[in-house]
Each structure stands twice: as structure tokens, then as C-alpha cells.
Figure 1 (cartoon, rainbow, N blue to C red):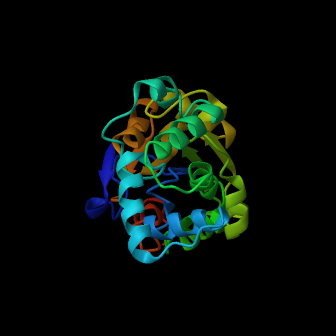
Figure 2 (tube, rainbow, N blue to C red; figure 1 turned 30 degrees about the horizontal axis):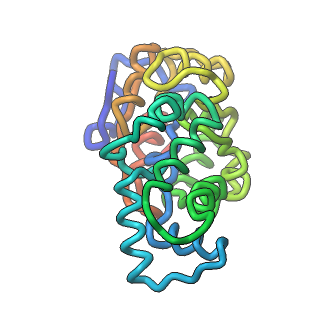
Length: 245
């Protein structure tokens, strides 16, 4: 069963009570920072100070080339195709794919491709949505188990710790650790097993068709539209479906 936000105000009458919630990370709980801020911060670590005009031009080119957390690249160079295919399964492929894409843009800043990627590995490179903390906290306070399920090539646990959200998350099922990528049902089953949840009593909240693939694992799926960084992202619907409002 897949629900969308406008209709997700109360549990369907035939549904079992929700006892656990799985959340996607990017586009659901948090969003990458503004592209210009991303480029300016990364360049600064390389000893380069960019004015807003140049930073904007570079940001546009780098996002088009392919930014982790951004739109898919229009073209992946043949030499990066294997790493691109494996980017959410292996940490080294994730880094190689995105630094390789960034390196296709002539920036004249030595080390910028790696600095841009390293920015993703810090909590400062992301912004939680404004309703993330309250949603996770209320679920935790009501005894609802929570897991984060993400197609990703690096550890995001430190991000949650920095944001003070780690106490509200019971487990992380990350594709590069699990060896499965959404929408493969196996990653959802693994997440449920990690928190001792019955998939048929579990809600998956995400922003993509890959997240909605949780229905094949027996879960109910709630799809929210990804909002701009730092804004409300419709996560209150998850609280309604679990009776935690």
C-alpha cells in the first residue's frame, strides 16, 4: 500500500497498527546544502576565496556534472561507469564516482573535487528539515521504533549525532553496509529485523519510487515530496499514521 501526503491523515481502516517507521535520509529527513554555499565552503578548504558570481557559475556546472544529493548527471563518462553503478554498494565507488564527475568541470582549484565530496561527509553539508527533529522525537516518546534506510556510500550516523537526533533512531540500514539497494525488498527486511519489527506493521517514509518499493517487503509506504533545505517536509503525516499527533 502506497500513501501520499494529501490523503495520509489517518490509517486506512483495514491496516494493522503501525509499530515501527523506516525513513529515507536524503529528501526525506535532510537535504544537501545550497549548491553555492557548498562550492564556497569547499573552495575555502583549498585556500581559494570565491566571489558569489564565480561560485554560482561553478555550482551550476558541478550540479549538472553530478552532485551527490543532487539531480542525476546527464552523462556519466565511460571510465566512471562501473563506479557509478556500484556507488551505493561500496564506499570507494561512491567517492570515485562523485569526485570523478566533479573533476570533469574545469575549476582551476587544486583539490576541489575531493573537498566537495568531503563536505558531504560532514553534518555541515546537510540541513535537516524543520519537522525532522519533532517527528523523530515524538515517535521515540511514543515507543515507535525508528530506522533510517538509505541508498548511500558513507556513514551518516555522525550527522545524526551532531544534530542531536541519534537518540531518536534505533538503527541504520545503509546500502553500502547491507549490500542491497532500494527498492530491493531485502534492505527493508534487514531494517525491520534490526529493530525487531513486523514489516506488515511498519511504515516506510520516503520521497521516491525506490522508497515506495517497501510495499514489496510487506510494508506500507508514505511518499512525501522533497522540500527545499530546512523547510517543513510533510513528516507530520507519519505521526498521524502512527497515532502520535
